[in-house]
View 1 (cartoon, rainbow, N blue to C red):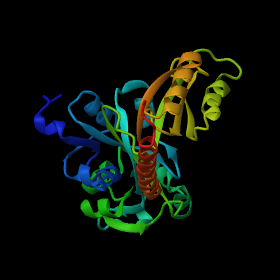
View 2: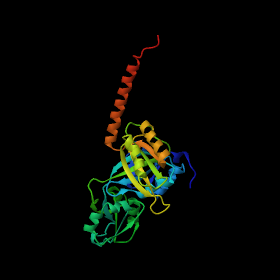
View 3: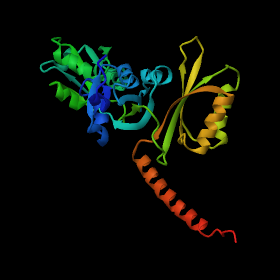
Length: 316
């Protein structure tokens, strides 16, 4: 591991190499694009880079609209890394299939890419390459890099159009994902908790202290009793034995909110051990609009309360 430098403290680690969707998602954020970006070989390497303090931030994929959650990201969040989510980044995903120049479509026998990218194109494979086999890589860009350097004439890669062009590959077909609307949610990793914005999300992991009938219901009831909106509930094996699971829960609200802190206090005291993964701004244009509306409403309410309090009679 290289020594920590002042420059690296200002850098952003992301799943590389250059040309990944992870890099594109990072560059879509104006404040991150101004920093030095550092590609890492794997998602776990990004987590390690931030956990160790060598990098202030890291960007990793969390979930996709077609294929669902990225398990290695969930497991690093739940079990391994001492980091918190700082924000969500929703990024549109459009996939193409590409080869080295001169390779013909009829000769393609092996298709390589990241597992999630391959899974997002199953219908296309069945129609266009029913006999082709697949091979996985740590990222779409690392797969494209491999194909560009290979002398094999039966290889193709699934990646972004820009990535194919970057590695001087010939595009065979584009927009091959199974659904036209295809997005991946990335998360920015760091240390600490961002301040509330008015439209935030909190992520936690619950480890039940005992597996008994109704134990999960008891946890969820704490959220229902406070009218806290759950946006995600997913189980993951604890890796300690068959049938043993923990639960990753996302919900609307910030740990600074009284209702949220009260809920977490009850869950942790009475039901389960809790790992806090972060409170952070909700992604997307709707999130920006709701935060703006909430900010205006908050200011208007503060002004209203200030005017009311100005009328409180003083002791005579």
